[in-house]
Image 1: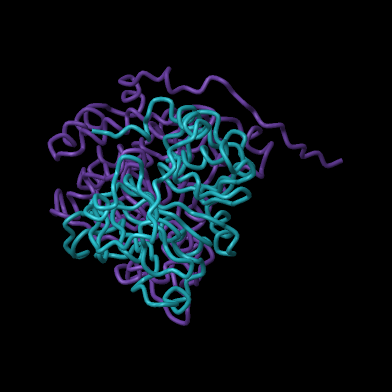
Image 2: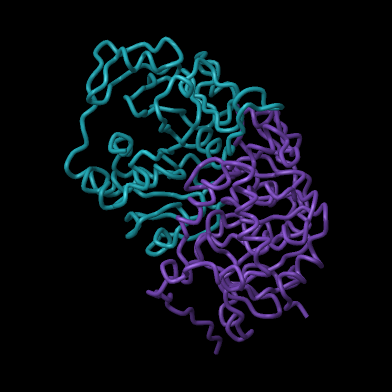
Length: 247
Length: 295
């Protein structure tokens, strides 16, 4: 969570997705990005994180003190104009080129698993200037190619795929997992292993990845959460609703 | 007379086979009481239209009321998967579904297209997404996606207050509420508070729909539970969690349905089963009034 919050730069307009990103935004605001603003597809813009726990972006504490309470299409208008710097998207499956599947595992006409769908994920992936995905690091989730592209990353990985297909935004910059950080090159393409979280190894991460994950020349250890970051996590998720693993 | 009971409103305006927009404010103000009444009346073959619906669509699917889903997301926002949606799509239980996948942006555009009475609207979203391959209402060419209009027969919207003539005030984020109401043939309002016209007309900027679209007003306090209603109720996270756990199995879902839908006569009866105090909002923060003076 602390690692995800570090993707937010000060001054960013952040399209905050459902679930965990709500907490990442709150942590960033309190740690290193005091002038970031959050945009929520339900139809809200905020500066200060909500004063009480949020189970969803539409909870009443997120509305009180908002900069703007409006309709979804107005929030989408800003993103369609390229005015959203960073988006967060959760996913069930991601591949080496950053394509996300939140729709169908297996044949979409006879799915093995029906996932909830895009929500705003596809919109963020296509229209925000850059985006990051958060994922539990498991071999079945980090796959060679997703069976269904709900939210496109770099498509087939060929140079210029996004521009050729008319996608406005720059694409994914990182896949943040429970084991490490996978980063994309500046001009897109295939994700590489940038850092592993304390207590984990490069071999372990590669073993839990469904493709031949290439490590950076020097794989760093992810910096552990700072005191400020931990304090913010405890403040905004006091009962561990988002940060304690569910059974 | 637009003022009627929930049972009357569903009986009169939501026939079998209807396309019904609900949950259009996303997580808040979801008309769960209306959905439960459809289940009690045994509606069949509905086409549910909405952005995310936070568990309401999952319940109607599990109860066998649904033929088609036209939505961006069906699940349980704080818990994840929609288990009834999974069973329907993966196993055809209790029946198979036709799914028209959208994103949040594209379902909004589909409703705006209907609201403006044009066949479709162009957008750049969904370029490069396989959603384009799955939904016959979406096509692409010349670097744009064409989103065909979706025109619901009825939109059902829960609001904080309304008068009996159908002027509804809602506040907080509105999601795709306005385009859903304009696109729909008719609108059913369910409200926390029934107020005099002098209250609603004191702030015409806050009236969400033209009264000419509204065919029914149902005074249904607590009608959005477990979703939140700004100024009235917090979101009941524990209730969503319990639903998520119970609906994992078809039997568990049936038991849930027996207790919360078939086991009660109406919403007032349902609310007797819930401890409302922990989720009731008690610290009020009214906005400054707007001055509509004219001379």
